[in-house]
Length: 209
Image (cartoon, rainbow, N blue to C red; front, side, top):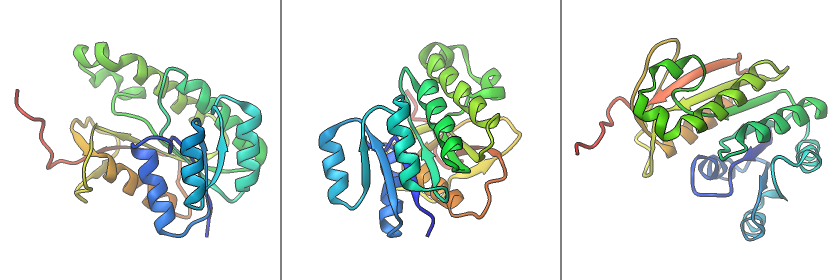
C-alpha cells in the first residue's frame, strides 16, 4: 500500500482529516508537525512523525527519504510562510525521488483570482496569493500532482455531495471532511494527471444575515 506523507495534520482541519483516512485504511503514514505534544499523540496512533517546521529543509528531506519514493505527499498547510514551506517540500520531494503530490489550496487561487470579490480579497487575499505561489511552484516541478481548491470551509460531518469542477467559475461552501475525502480518493488513483479542481458542495448555501 502506497505510504502517505502528510503536511498540515497537526491541527483539527483538512490535514487531520486526511490523516484519519490514512489510519482507517491502515496505510503507512508519515507526518511533519510543529508541536511536540501533537507529535506524541500521533506517534501513539502509529504515525511516523517528524517534529519541526516545514520550512526546515533538513527535516523535510529526512521525512521524504523516510517515506520513500513510492509515497504520495498530501498537504493542506497554511500560514504566513505557506509558499516557502511548500517550496521546501516540493524541492525536497524531487531530490528524494518522490513523484506525487496532492495540494489543498482555495477557490480564488491562480487564474480564479479574478472571481474573488473585493471584500474577499481584502479579507484573505494575502493567503490566497501565498497559496497561488505554492500552486505555481508545484505546477513547474517534476511531480505529478492534483490541486484541490475548496470553497468556504465548514466543520461537520461529510455530506458526500461535494463535487469537483474544472475550467469554470465556481462559488460555494464545502465541509472539511468532504475535502479530505476527495483528497483521499485522488491519492488512491494510479495517476494524478496534473489536474486542478475546484471543490464545492452545491447543496450547501451561505447562511443569511
